Length: 465
Image (cartoon, rainbow, N blue to C red):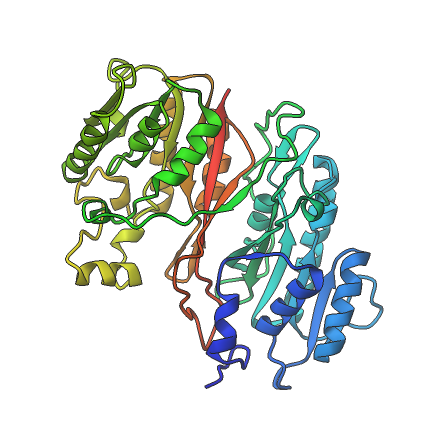
């Protein structure tokens, strides 16, 4: 059975559904996107608009010829007809731009989007390939900023993360051994008006990184394959693996440093810290989960030398006092992803319900996971981290495991919003992606639109100023 979105079968649909991929070059990336976002059966005009550099143009021309698609460029003298897709690739330009030069490029993209909006067919997409970058010692989240601007005129729908797996390919774009870029997707629909504007959000206001802080061998993505959870651990509806916590704790701390998590759940952060010779501290709002955490930590602590300490309090993170814990060397945490666990009908919820497992963090009205208003949720979460900054040592690091959210057909850039708002108290470092490949793909949106399987988590890291 073929669908009315792109006339391909579910077997063809699924491979494109994963929200991250290993980059195989421009031609492969262009082909997969054109094949997915275009109806090639003649029912719609076979036209696209492309903006990119000379390297990209060679690739898009080759792909377009094989698919019998007409491509229009900024320099085209022909009148722009109806378009099935607008494809913009500015990765290579952004990698070497100063903030001033980027603002000029942003204005160009703004004008193109505004001009072509009437030509884009209803419920068809603009896709932009772009990246955050490090320029002269400052980490500049260009992709986040560009996405916020495009989202004012089009409906922000989804994102995919392209991953370079060798330094030879990555060094063209960013100073990492394993680098990434974004493909952000925006749709013209009943919720978009085409009135593009420059948001008041300033991602660059408080960027304060020193030169040469990041080395070329630093990766910014990794595939983690967590071990199977035991019966006690699976009771928590959103537990992250100790393997990930250890990866970051080892990077940002030294032996006997104090690691802290204000939303401890079943004690994964503390256990990870103890396992590699760090002290593990934290708070947890739920008495149900803290009992599990205490059992896990007590069992492991019996094997530790007395110098390695741990302490976990049943307490709202908003009410932590100076007397509760020693100064923090490193704060590692994964907060609730808004109130998504309270969403009815979610696939994960249905599976847990069938097994008789808990569906949310708690029923406590003070639980962040029970706040229904998105802006209030973000503000309260940021206020917790701002308060904890007072207990962190100068130069200490904070890592937050989080993801952008799709809810009721709308996208909420939670990772971007935290990256922006927390800069008042912390300096932003390059994001790291935890990639998942051990989950089953589902044909979300099959038949009418693109909704990816979100298999990437942001690991946002900040340094206390």
